[in-house]
Image 1 (spheres, rainbow, N blue to C red):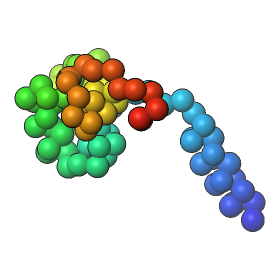
Image 2 (cartoon, rainbow, N blue to C red):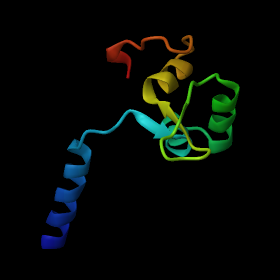
Image 3 (cartoon, rainbow, N blue to C red):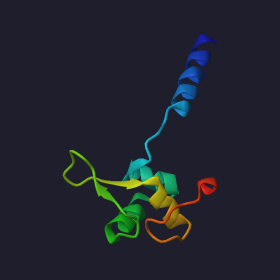
Length: 85
């Protein structure tokens, strides 16, 4: 029983921890429920804006609001209404 309590405590702590809105391509693909290749193509064509990851030679980071905007069909960089995320 202690193991279950410990596991639940760790899960709840992780869920409460603030998350960065910045994601690498693999995280962004999972967030958007699409394949990594599709997300990479959207980043490479600029349909979803990206930024060079610090300390990386080829890694790119995307912001959750840009993925949300793409999924909602909004223009790149558009502000996504708070209640829709």
